[in-house]
Each structure stands twice: as structure tokens, then as C-alpha cells.
Amino acid sequence: MRVRVRRPWRSAAEVSALIIAAVVAFPLYWMVLSAFKPAGEIESDQPRPWTLAPSADAFRRVFGQQEFGRYFLNSLLVAGTVVIASALIAFLAATAVTRFRFRFRTTLLIMFLVAQMVPVEALTIPLFFLMRDLGQLNTLGSLILPHIAFSLPFAIWMLRGFVKAVPEALEEAAYLDGASRARFLWRILFPLVFPGLVATSVFSFISTWNDFLFAKSFLISDTSQSTLPMALLVFYKPDDPDWGGVMAASTVMTIPVLVFFVLVQRRLVSGLGGAMKD
Image 1 (spheres, one colour):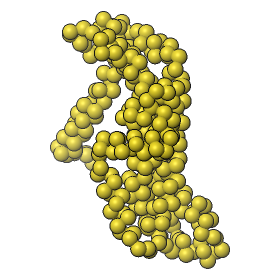
Image 2: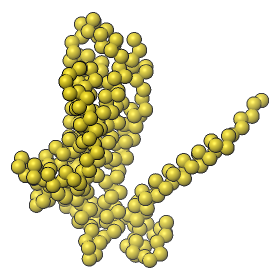
Image 3: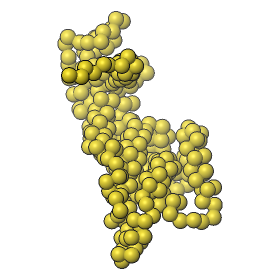
Image 4: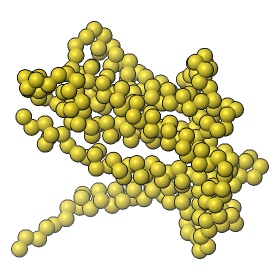
């Protein structure tokens, strides 16, 4: 009978992982806890990491807002459009820069990296004037277009590795079997790089869903076009902030992100080995 001896470094790594997970999850726990705390406990000078009198009043105030449902649908429309559009464009662009040789290809890839390095805050004012000239201010288009542009560099760089991992022999075999370029692209290559598309979609969805800067800058007067992050301003007032409402609204905002991640997390770890056998 063999006795497995636990190595000290492995135990230390597991303990460290648990500590890091607890530190990362604590803000989320405190947000949900504050959403269920009565107003007196939230404003107390001695905060406690628990509550003995949970209350759903904050959630009632959130769902009692007449425009909250509209904000939710606007956020869903913007995030869904950005995810689908950026994934399709990035897939085609990654295929082009990987499979084809053309002038300035390396320069184009370097420009993608440079675009990722520019802070979003530095481009907000130029984007504001661009959206104004295009007549997109106070519309959901002013949120969709910039987020697609900011999602593409990361998505193209990530999908480039997935496309490159597909053997060229598979493409040649498809052409010998009579498959057209379009058929190979959508029937063979697209399913193989789908895990990469899912990973980039998670990034695009989270960054778009949680966006506050563009929504605050480009949606000036038409509140009917506002998204969920803007709903937090309804509960935050400088003279009398409703922290319970802010935490409850933040909790509601987090649920779609968690649901989306749970739905796609299996695709994130699926490999390409079995699908690319010659």
C-alpha cells in the first residue's frame, strides 16, 4: 500500500490560492451583504461582516424605478451587439493577417498593440467630437462603435494564435475535397477557433456591460438611452446617497455577467487537439 506524501510546497500553494480567492471575493461579498443590510447598519460607524436582519427593501427600490427595465434592455442590446460584431470582425481580420501575406502586415499588427496601450480616458474627448460629427450623441450607437473599436485589437491578437494553430494541411485537404474558401472559413475554421471567440467575447461583454465613462460622456440629455451603470446615479446623491440602492443595483448588474460566464466557461477550456486531427 502506497502512502502519498503531500509536498509542503503544494500545500503552501493551495493555502495561498485560497487566501487570494478570499481577498478577491471579499468585495463581491461585501456588496451583496450591503444590498441586504438595513439602512441603519449600512450607515453605522461600526460595520460588521454580517447582518442579523436582512432586508430586501433596497432591491424593491431598484426594481421600483420606472426606467430600470429600459436601462437593462439598453445594456443588453449594446453588449450583445458589441460581442457579436467584434467577434465576427476579429475572426475575419485574424484570418487575414495569419493566412495571407501582404505589405505592412507587421506594421498593422504593431498598430493593434499600440492601440491597446492608449488609455481610454485620453480618447474620450476626441471620441466625443467624433460622435457629435457623426450625429450619434444620445444614441446607443455612440456606445456600440467605440466599444467595438476598443475590443478589436485584443480580439485580433488573441484569435491570431488560434488561427495559426490550425494546420495549413487541413486547409489544403479541404480545398482538394472541393471546399470553397468561404466554406472552409465558416464550416471548418470557425468551429476550431470558437474557444478563442468565446474568450474574446467574455472580455468584450464585461468591458461593455460595466462601461460608465462613455455612457456618461456621450449620453447627455436623452435618459431613455441610458444603460445600467447610469442607473447607479439615481441612487447616488451627494447630499443623501442611498448606499443600499447602489449596492443592490450593483448586485443586479453583476448577475448577467456571472450568468454569461457560467454559460461559456466550458468553451474557454475546450482544446483544439481533438478537432484538428488530420
